[in-house]
Length: 68
Image: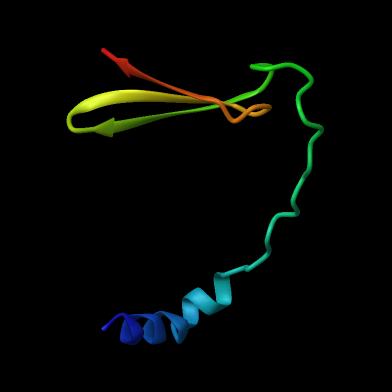
């Protein structure tokens, strides 16, 4: 069934006329000089609890905290 859906979408004329498959160029950045200078953070809901995930870019050390 998924193959049929992919084939149908692939032949959709309005989608083909309006789609642009341009990919954004990768932009490299210099690594941080100190721990916790640059971080990544995201929220997630797990088993009804809201969690905050924080990751240090330099060491890849991560922290997970419950947000109430």
